[in-house]
Length: 259
Image 1 (cartoon, rainbow, N blue to C red):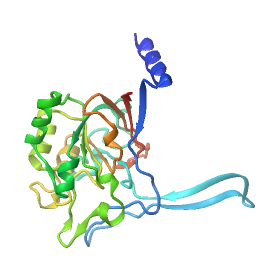
Image 2 (image 1 turned 90 degrees about the vertical axis):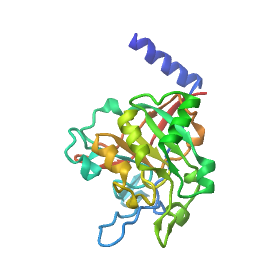
Image 3 (image 1 turned 45 degrees about the vertical axis):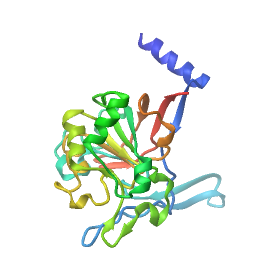
Image 4 (image 1 turned 180 degrees about the vertical axis):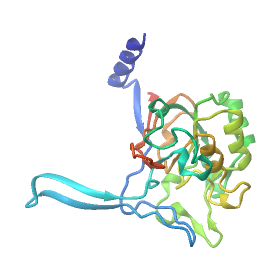
């Protein structure tokens, strides 16, 4: 039976009846990186240095050295990224069971709300209203907040003002609902991090990181192309780099959807 299912998938991909959607942003020196207030250490920006490019030091090949923080651009957050998840078994990028890198997605379209309010917060009531239209969020699913934020660039993407960053995300009760009542595999967003920009003021602070990672769940940040996904029915493929002891990594997130 499994061979038949895989053969059907291969045929569907070849025919185009199932398409692959890229949900990732490009990595470049201009990729926005989250900034922390002093005295906290900062993540380095993406850097790329040419080793050789069909020249005297490498006449037949082109390659580069790169350096960047683990949580740069479109990236995967592993449980050990947050202090609450530091003791989670198999909680680093190299130890997570590979079967957990393929999971269904529920896409919550809040693009209009986020356009009207940059600090929009997804609530438990908002998820229940979504479920009334699309059905219960299945256990083991990703919940993705479609905000349209990936259409922004540079300073507008980070959107930092005098009171800190203002970006959309889930409120505390929403995160608790996803973890305790819907048993999701993780939460994904188009912003630079999975928590709302003002989540440092929530109780607990940064509830998405605190509760998701503290319960062995994952995060996806700086996603793009969520407007190409249906509310339900997409399958996300999310493997991070297999960094030994890694807290996360840049990730080319792909979705399989029916055409």
